[in-house]
Length: 53
Image: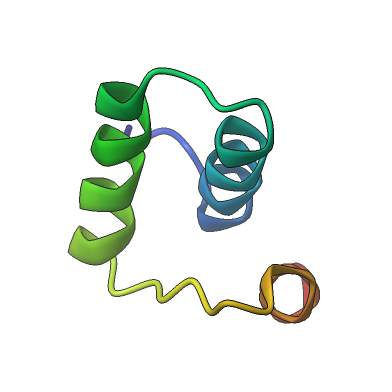
């Protein structure tokens, strides 16, 4: 996970949620998001735009 950029981590999380992938995989992504202090807001599109800056 350390090789994954913040942007790609967020994109992976969003896509995993959209595709309804295994909840354990999503939980793994969420754990890494928390470790990096990246907060995913309910308005995912807004958050996605902020990360791309």
